[in-house]
Length: 290
Ligand code: MN
Ligand code: MN
Image (cartoon, rainbow, N blue to C red; front, top):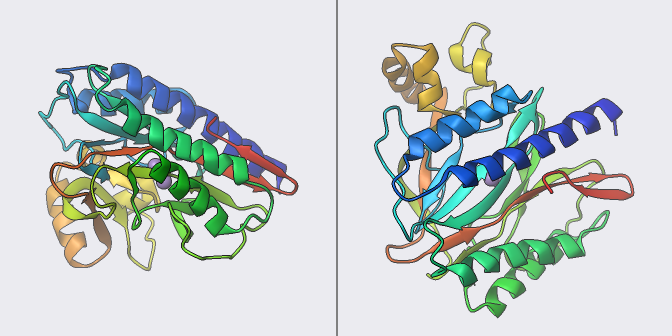
């Protein structure tokens, strides 16, 4: 692949990994989700990149897609199981990685947290050029079940392209029978989710994350100019556009912008997640966020 593209992809990986570690270090009982998000995103900007999407802080039965709203007052509580999900981008070349922490570290959910981490490691072990997609899913699903938990079936990894966080291919968390092979020069995110519930998520309320979804990208549009076609936080738009609420309302109606729903398992269940970005380049397979 193009050496410059490779270099930027690896740089984004390294920065995404550092940001994930930094975010986790800020999480403690009583701290504001808003502070953790703003500090982590600022960390990426100060280190030569941009966030490839807002920091996701999804708690307990939430699997993904919650970021604090402008002025959010939500705080972490002891025992919360927090999925911390972040990535960096360099000129649109993206990383995406995640880890799970238990607030206060009392060890009540160590098994669940270890489970998704172990499933991710099992997946990494089967990777080779042109690996079949369902082999990755099988490795994940078997590991999660060996811990006595359920893999989340309707959520998984994905292909990544420049300025495109969720490109077409889907990497399942179980053997879905898809024998299609990973292609040369493909970048993918692998993200096992383990659940104490039924292993199916549904759409909850909006999680303050939006994305451009129109067909024409107009220069001069605050979203295209600032966030391109990557997900953005309501917080980010609020800082550059005082009448952001009106803008969002109008563009949601016109279908120029879409709102991500928080993805949730049923009440009372707990979910853990682990995620890495992997680059398939010729004969080499490189985890960019390791
Ligand atoms: Mn992610
Ligand atoms: Mn992802």
